[in-house]
Image (cartoon, rainbow, N blue to C red):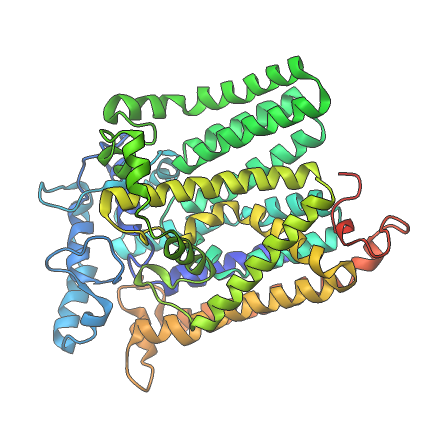
Length: 533
């Protein structure tokens, strides 16, 4: 069953990768530019001030662009304006985009757009650059599609990793499988996994780090501490927000030391973890500090490097925190790519209610007992959120916006969120109704995904008035797709989503038989967690 969900997730990613217009993914063109430059030049590190290649720069003038794009070139236009052009003008743009010279991928101009994602850690770009070495002379649109597909394949590892993590937390294979189903139909996970972006690597990497940390908590061993350190190092070479995992792990080691009184051994293991992580990724952050005077090297941090901490704190009080957090949670529930498409408001309010209820349930659960694995997930998730709030403040101080932060970064800790959320909800409702609660959440998430695609995304992308001209979905797409190929992918998406829901609900029916007799105290809501955790 796990393999079936995994394959269905990959099919969904293939559909998303094909449906999304060129550069519809958040910062996609800048991510792609870094990998392409590494591939074309053979260099492992790209200068943070480098420019994008001529073909990508030209595509930003020719293709319709998402309206939420950070900076639209003078000759670029959004989807809304693109479909207002006459058919001849659109045809000329599409033809010019298809016929971009292959050598332009290796040519650069001083006035081109900046490849600002070069400030990101390089691991994801290395993987995609190696893949692009095999795709040197195919058209730009085909190259982007191929990189999207590989990103989705890498991101799909979140499915088996999450299964083992959920099984560790709850001690139930059927429940773990049903939670995998929820993650597999989550629309935001599909969006994040189907665009050219290092999120596609960070999602499984963070999930694997959580799984390794859980195994270490259960049996603190030096080889497990080494594995945690290696995964932390890999994560730090993928996204700077893995820096939030460093204090999370330090707190974890301190807590375990106070609990077991094995101070000397745990100090050695903590040193192993941090030492290995530093050996793998430390060079990148030392380089950032030498070049920019900041640890992360991100643009916002560089812009504020001369501002004192007290001044930062004082000015950060001007952030509209309620609105900023609401935007993060809303875009985490559903955002239609960089065009910032949205669902009806009542769906978001319903999602806010589920989040609020689960938080209340988690608080009740912690008052009842403190399971080590739950504390671990809460530790990582809370510190990740603190990192998000810090980034909000940095964006406000550097760019003057309280709402520039999106919720797509939270998918890296999706398994901490899902396991904690389910545990919190079931703490309120109890084990007796767990099948109904999880089934309702699974159906609800899948319904949001299907509704968002068919009622919001597709109508916006075709913009053909009352009747939908679905042929517009093929504009600036790989030539080998065609309408028949797109239809087959849509059928695969629909069937895969349905199969995942069916498998998830069928797994829930096995919950009672899966639980060993006598291991679940009647009426104890907390027994949803692994009883020997």
